[in-house]
Image 1: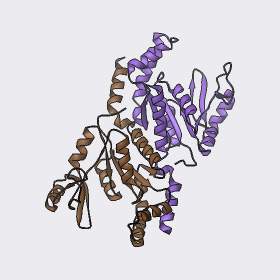
Image 2: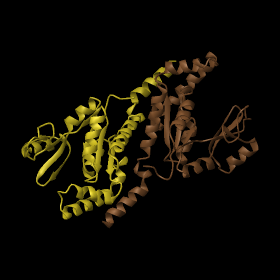
Image 3: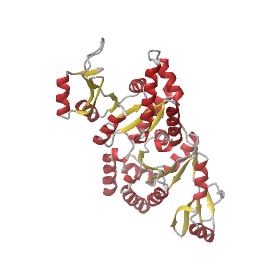
Image 4: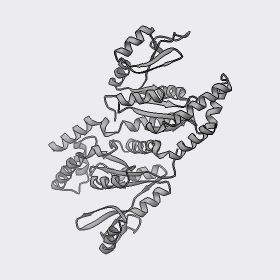
Length: 207
Length: 207
């Protein structure tokens, strides 16, 4: 049972929980998904392509988009803007794709205000020790950075209840299946099947 | 991710949509489910066993249960009482089983009042023509009875929005999988993972 309109899916979770890999696998293993592409004012890194990793904009262009409400949400990190272009997301939704947005909790709340039907998913590790292991395991972070990330995770954990579902990324394959299952289930909500319900009612009345 | 407490699942749907077969397959193919057993004052038919098909009660016993609020819901059909014993359902839920109740919309509403976390599922055929075919296909019903059932279905269709999910029983195996997927997804709601969230918060704070 698929509707014409896709579902807007917001994925948040602790840094180190493996969101990026999960999203990549989800899109590779199942059909019907589209990853949202962010706009940013940070310069492209070698190998990055405009419209693939990011939409690369000048500061002026970005601020014009903010003023035009052309971004669903935006934030500034380390002197660069990052944001979600509304037209790209809405185009994919209208094509029937489930659009995935990886975003932190403040952004998730802004999305939910504008798209009350958005599905909010939170990815966690099985426990804090595993989160620490994955952050350390990258080998590229100092203890101070790891501590900061864990403190941030503690703050993020305060907001978990605003999410519709929580998944634990213990085994990657299991977690991808669970995510897909949760999204597949959401397609069965009556609010997403208005046309079918209307058709069924009409047919039964005419009987 | 399984919690200690099971989910109360209410399944409604048009007569002829195949609810009974679906529930049977769900319980056979997956672990963790329990079918609720109704109480009734109708006499047992040959081969029926007390506590398997129904709990068979006298009218006096049944009315005592009503007075004691020992039934979650009850109704009278053709001079016989039918109802859902609270103790059986709550025992299975506390054992961590997802308890399935097959019940019509009025009963479903009564359940939702008392168990706001109950998951309400509605089973439909792909269209009204298929519903008619299945009702006729039994070969045991007169045209008048079929007409009555279709009229009843038209009334039932008015209430679909109170359900959390709608599934279309076109292919039986697909539908069983979808039902199981919807229930598996429900286990990921933050409200059903309070203990995990509390544990994660405590660990992150202690870090």
